[in-house]
Length: 205
Ligand SMILES: [Fe+2]
Image 1 (cartoon, helix red, strand yellow):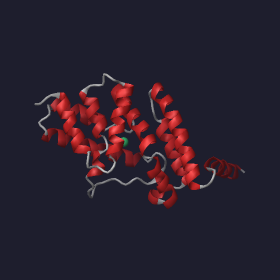
Image 2 (cartoon, rainbow, N blue to C red):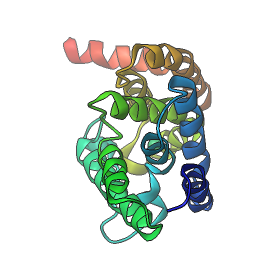
Image 3 (spheres, rainbow, N blue to C red):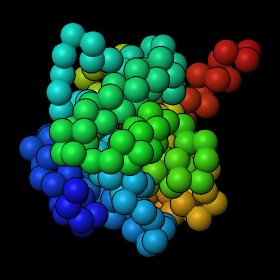
Image 4 (spheres, rainbow, N blue to C red):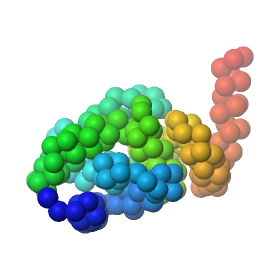
């Protein structure tokens, strides 16, 4: 088996053709900021965590905001399918079985976290999402794709910030969330907050 650095470099090349590789690269950057000493397992998991989306198939899950924000059923299927695909790739690379299992276990919980390393991966993913994926979700809100409305996109942005379990990362997410909500409001041409408040009031009344 080759050195740690070489396997990480091979993973960088593997994810490069994925349409949202930037999100994965930025997640790895955030991981370096949050945990400069993160080990190879955590680095590999962070760099590859969404790769199932690069290999669409009949079992690809589809997010549907009408099921709720978050869409837990989508999250469960997405992280499990990614874990499978990443583990298979690592096996092809000749990685040690213990490393394959450890990366697989992290990718399989990347939406939810659960222990220190998993919480770091989930935080790095969330920060990168709020940085890189905002315009794509605003477009869903405008088109109605995947059941989104502008209000549901706002809820999704808030969820991505509030789900972070590490206090330091939550602080880092705060300005990113504010910028994402401001951009949503600007792009949808209406005050999302005001609309939500008005609807809640009319429901109360
Ligand atoms: Fe992600």
